[in-house]
Length: 191
Image 1 (spheres, rainbow, N blue to C red):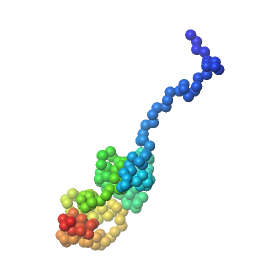
Image 2 (cartoon, rainbow, N blue to C red):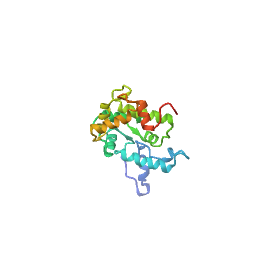
Image 3 (cartoon, rainbow, N blue to C red):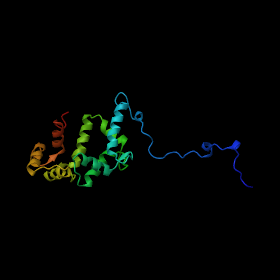
Image 4 (tube, helix red, strand yellow):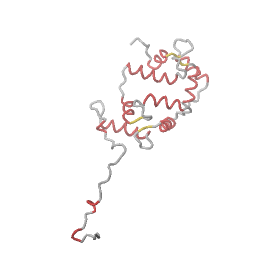
């Protein structure tokens, strides 16, 4: 049986002849209202944070990966000579262990309310970044290494001055208590 072309009276509508396009894969379109939580966070504030996030998310993947994080630090003037530093920062912010910082994690970082408990926890995380040997104290050598990793061009005398200022009990180390007191200008445990 041969197939005949439709007559002009039997023309096929081209829109109906084609199957519907497959659903688009990839991240769903961004909707600020999904993240807005009035009165604490308005849609406009969410959009502002999203604009900042998009600056770091160079490839538009919806996640800030280690290379983009490194580029963000370097664009801010912070040189990152060691991958360990990047992965430590990433490890602190990547709460779902996806290997990158997604918008929800970035939004939490940008809008977190800071209580005294949170302050101690956040300062402890920063302290841990400096405490390379994980001994619970920062040595002069560790402080010097971090300054170099951050691209700070400081003389040994400047680092020594900073170290002495932080070593409040003058024991030759910067303990977490010293670091906390310096960062908050409070005495640890007296709140």
